[in-house]
Length: 274
Image 1 (cartoon, rainbow, N blue to C red):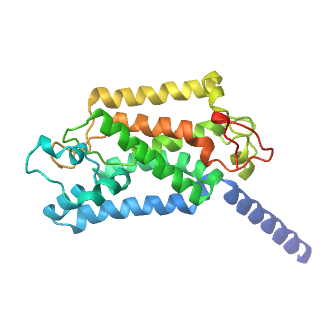
Image 2: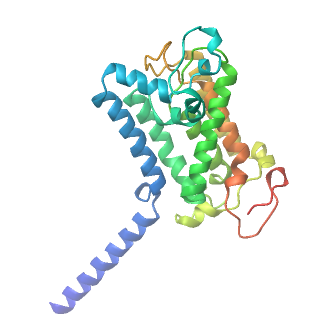
């Protein structure tokens, strides 16, 4: 019986080691800390709004954090001044991405953020990823500002930044050996494959299909005028223009955040990767 016990123990240990190895390599069980942190922060903010703040306090919080083009054109509504002053004119370009109109709005955004954000964070590392996330959020706010200049059209939600992470992930995820390619290895090397040059994005059929689906979804958003319904003025909208602003920024600026490849090469705008 003793040899059987030892053999059984050996099999058990091997199986346990195999399971541990799979869990370490499987992205679903190995979400980067920066992604977990952002999801938790956005969830906590919405929890506070829904369960801890009085209605007037919630409205004040929205006025301080949502991005609203009217803030930059106060002459439209004489005497109507949003709180926060000059500081809010700066921080709302990003803070709007941390708040959501409902639990459904939050949940849908996180469903998209978890896979694409994780893929990009595993490639970039936490600090580069955070810089990329903020940059695409700001780009989305600028796009919204251009579309609704002078209007009382507050916007909330991480959709613009998430669109940027989707665009960034698209640059490498479909490449041979990438995390969405059938030849992937299943480990971290999938996230370090050479990225597709910007000029090559529009020649890859898989990327073109992804682009078509993504723009189709956003056309649906725009056509149906979906609203987050926060109750701030006219209602904080989920603006498809902000989505596109974040997506384009993520697609174009990816190379400036991407870590150095094993073989240095010139890429977008002849920018040397470093």
